[in-house]
Length: 257
Image 1 (cartoon, rainbow, N blue to C red):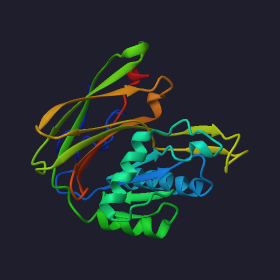
Image 2 (cartoon, rainbow, N blue to C red; image 1 turned 180 degrees about the horizontal axis):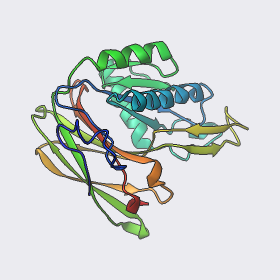
Image 3 (cartoon, rainbow, N blue to C red; image 1 turned 60 degrees about the vertical axis):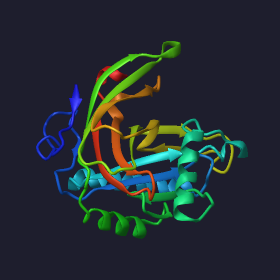
Image 4 (cartoon, rainbow, N blue to C red; image 1 turned 45 degrees about the vertical axis):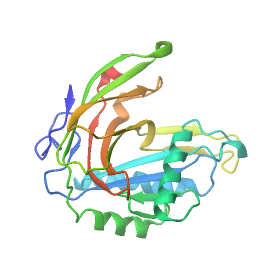
């Protein structure tokens, strides 16, 4: 079982290869969500920024969690993104309503659910993350990858246990499997002829109402997932104003591959 404790300061940087991020109680954190597409020529520079954010956070031991959501509204414009999902577009639409903008664009970066900007803007990203890291999590969260079980059609499902404290009254728990080091050869569309190298790609995602302080969620494990390059990220979010109030991540066990 892969686990991350509620305080987590000891496990976060231990020698255990499956222990990754668990912000100590009272520490600042930043959940960085980016909405992107392989069909968008403006997106590769933003994806480089996202990769840099995650890499720098690992080196500096900062509690930063990067997620690349590939939206599907570019798919009819020449190149179907193999990582795109209508659910990720719906998530971006929910943010558009919360921000009052009413429109979607790529690349868009959202930090802790409350600040949005063009994803390739390194200065804005650096500033927003630095600001987020000064605000302590108010809802401690722990995850444990408890099992992988058979799913429909011969697939596999990952069972993720969670434990939290003091969730907001209107809270949801978001859980994602993200994968690094992905390479795609793009044959058509705005990025035709390019080789795209992408990190922190969301490969599976679910949101559940957080009506108990402990429980389980299940995610479908992609058949081509490389567990050596994958992590499970969980974050608690207010379902009203969208602020994220706690986050954690653990590595995917090798048995999930």
